[in-house]
Image (tube, rainbow, N blue to C red; front, top):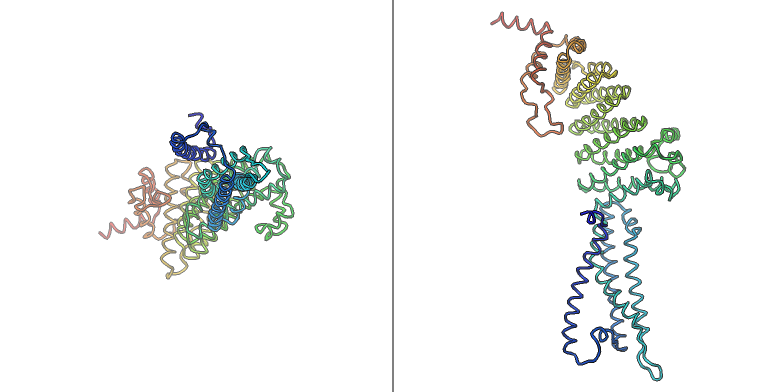
Length: 543
């Protein structure tokens, strides 16, 4: 088992078919040759007869063998050219460049060329008897040529298998990712093999290649390949963030050619200088590629938008772990950019998924003690929730309310200093419809925000005396609500029995569900509203 675990998969992929095909050919030839040798009238030995070459016959045979090798070379080049071109068209144009830089491909194609040339020259070196000139048969050269021709034919099958394996999307993506990681944050030996400028170029090129593959896959609705490329960018950046403190400062200088890259040339000179000073040019480049893929997918492949949000969260969490403040800020900035693009295109479901990942990043910031970052994210949640409300995207605003309430719960439990600010922002999120003709989505949004606030109040009351003052704050914000709305909100929350929503959703749980312990606290919370008490008295009198 240990030996099998250490073997080289590529070498095994070459040797296995070579051994099988070579053994089969040898068995067939030697078996038939043995039968013929047994019936032959000769005093030569078994192998001596095999290499007893006749010059004239040999000249013709060698000429045919040269043609055979040339034909094999032509077939190989034709097949490889077609396959590489198709792969380059489907995935990324730079695949052809990668292919012809691969040592195995160069070695195999060079072998075919050398074998063809060798057999051709050996064929003209064989001389028959011509007057006083004796015949000459270069036996060693002929035998070697025979083995070269044999190996050329045997090599076709494993080489085609290698080519298809080389061009497998997962292999291509993994190869590009590893090369970029080695250039940016590899071993000291790997980093020292090239100058800083070359390493920057290689890392940048790798990120762009992965982005090209993802964009092309999105345009062809190829989810698997797009997901693989997007994940590879995330893995690259996460690995880089872990090794970033050990990288020399020269790496972070944005030189002249790097400034000419499309993702940097559009920035103001001061902004580029800030990226260099903050040591985040590579993270900026990677997230800019994510932004391009996100915009390409928006409205077309929601799963890709969701995956980009997930991976941006992973990058942000890796930055939190590395305590890289500027990289964390970049992750937050790009989450805001995703939200802006999503709301502008009114993609409600995508906004729902992005907010879920954004909130989880904020929860990680709470756990890491990043108080100011949590406050900022709370403000951004409120900002985009109100923008969505203005665009009549009530469900997005409702989702923001529930996520902000969840952040309040986490920050309260963690005793985070950010808690009070996030709660204040949540209470500022809702907005009454301005007139009686307000749309139903605005009314539904307001109800959704109030339900999230009421749920949060039940959490505070369940937490005991330390939480009651915050429940009172929510009560103060809701005390002027109409009794009809308050009673309907209370009844809806109390009547939800199942934690799971009745449809398949990414979050898995029902927004409005509260457990029995918190339902009891909901009853307490709504009992504080005089409007509800007066209504119960009025109903009883009428009855």
